[in-house]
Structures are given as structure tokens and as C-alpha cells.
Image (cartoon, chains in turn blue, yellow):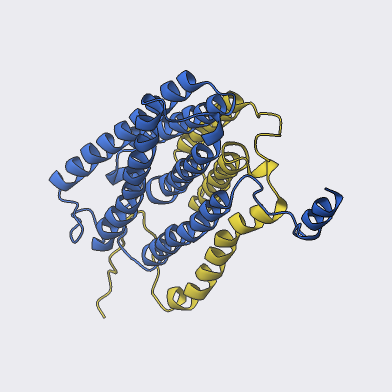
Length: 205
Length: 106
């Protein structure tokens, strides 16, 4: 037995891993760092085009701040329900996980619905990918690409979380799976974090 | 590691995020210089993003190196802005509020 213990000690890695729970969590963090760079590049490009433009409209005059402020509120709420879902499964409360995960998915769906409404409204007013009656054409291009890229992330997140919601409803998620939920939660919070930046740079600034 | 730490006050963080969002919207209507509004908005947005990362994504309770991984894109984006600066300075720049048309013909 002592020999086995000695061998086990001998192969112990010199450094503890960054995420002792699982490699999946580290993988998600690295993916998110890379994904943040995509958004960062889009926002930096937006800044450069706007700075170089002579007739860039004031976003607050063209875009609806009230609706998007509510969309921000909605995503913040869905982030809170997501942490509560994770906290529930970490203490083995499957019922709590189901409730809070359902609320998170609903928050995401409502966000997407409002974005669809906002886009439709703006397109009817003439703002498209290649046209903008309020000034610089690139305003429309950058607006739809950045909010669209974010909307695609929300759509991905809703699908991702819905898979776990179905599993939870079928009773196939247990306390032992808390790490998988934690990884999904990281993605969802990232989508919220990016929206906070998009809301400021594209709508408010 | 995330399960071992004391659970943060999520509802408290929610109220902070909500308050900062309301302040952000109020700031854009303040009768102060656009540059100052811009600085305030960026500061507020980064504070909100940090709150989400530190408490909701539990970065505050993770290994320090993981935080450095998360910070990498921010550093790269600042570098990217500096890389774009030469292009920006080559473009004639005017204010965005109301495009002024030059009165004198060229």
C-alpha cells in the first residue's frame, strides 16, 4: 500500500491546474477570451469608422434607448437567475435548477423577441445593412453586424441552456453535474457582459 | 474552487448593476462636454462588466492566472486601438452632433 501511495505522490503534477473542477471550465474560459477578442475587434472597428466619419448620427437620436435599456435590464435579470440555478444544483436542488433555468431561457427568448421588434422597426424607418437615411451608411452596417453578432450569441446561449433545461426536466441532471451547468453559466454571463459593452458603445456613446 | 468559496450576495450585485445602468442613461443627458460623457460612460460600462466577471462568473474566487487569461482580450483591444490610430489621424475629423457644411467653396 505504501508503495502505491509513493507512486501516486510521484506522478502528482508540480502545479495545481487553474480550474481544479474540470478542464472543460478552463476550455470555456479560453474560448470566451478568444470570443471577447472578436467583439473587441468589432467595437474597435466601429470606433475607428465613427471617428473618421463626418456625418455619423447620434445613436440616441436614431435608436430607441428606452427599449434597449429594458433589454439590458432583462439580460442582467437572466444572469441573476442563472447564478441562482447554479447555486441550486450545487446544493442538489433539482427543482430550483428547473425553475431558475427556465426563467433564464425565457429571459433570453424575450431579449431576442425585443431585438427582432427593434430591428423590424428600424428597417421600416430605412436603416439597413447598406442604407441609413439619418447619416453615414456605415452606421447601419456596424449597428446590424455588432448587434446581430451578439444576437447570434444569445440564440446559441438559449439553445445551449435549453438542452440542460430538457435534461433537468427529464431528471437527468444531478448535483454531480453542477460543473457542466457552471460552464454553461460562464457562457451566459459572458453574453450579458458583452451586451453591457455593446449597449454603452453602440447605443449610449 | 467556485463551490468552496462563500457565496457572494447576488441580489446585491444585481442592484448595483441596475443602479449603474440608470446612472449611465442619466449621464447621456447631462449638460457637460461630450468627452466627459464618453469617459464617464466607458468607466461605468467597465465597472458593470467587472461586476459580472468578478461575482457572476466567480473570477474573484478563481486562480489569479485565470483572471489574467480573462484580461488578455482587453489588453489586446487597447493595442488594436493604438494600431488603428495612424489610420484615424489620416481622416479628416468633424464633430458628430450636426454635420457642418463649409460655406466657402473650394
